[in-house]
Image (cartoon, rainbow, N blue to C red; front, side, top):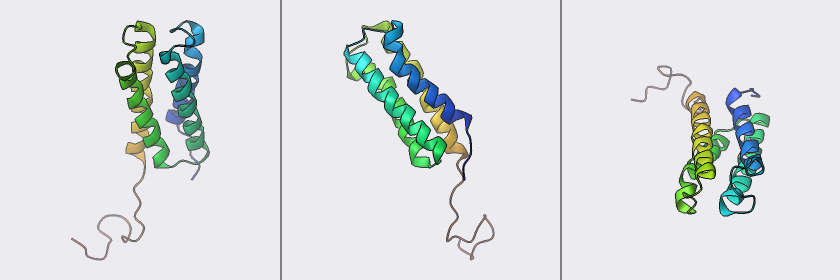
Length: 125
């Protein structure tokens, strides 16, 4: 089941953007916001590449969780005084979270051991 999903490619690009953003003037290169951006961006991109290679729902939930972390990070790591990095991570976190969540909504549920599609089971209520 190798499917190409635009959401995973979008998440890869957003992860790469997070890694590069401090170098484009979105915050200081060595501060806590930049370090968070480098680390989370790298993990997001790697997990999205893994999802492209072999789609599995846990990878989408991982990126959904990382997207939520990016939204919370400016408050948890105390860089709300840095408008550029704060808004960059919040907006990118929302986009990553939305794209990952969208994939989880479209993921088929497993029917192994339950008799197939609804209405064709073994009479369970």
